[in-house]
Length: 100
Image (cartoon, rainbow, N blue to C red; front, top):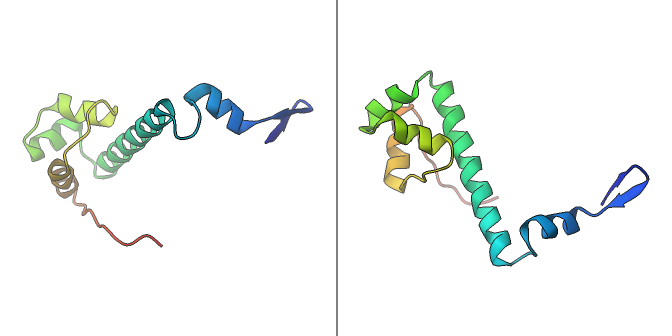
């Protein structure tokens, strides 16, 4: 809870109102959408850090610039193999490790 203007603000209630109760289909869809946007942002930042334009990255993986744009806006989700190609094209590797 967060106190705002001397009123108690229930974050859990606000999330339930906005996205549905925990475990509901609407809440699960909202969580999935949030992960898609998060992953899109990671790809965008990684491309910029690699000093590549969308067109340059697209050429390196054999795709078109529009595909990279859709990935970075979270409109398209790459396959695992495409994700590995994108990482390699940016000089990165994908590592899977046990959770802490």
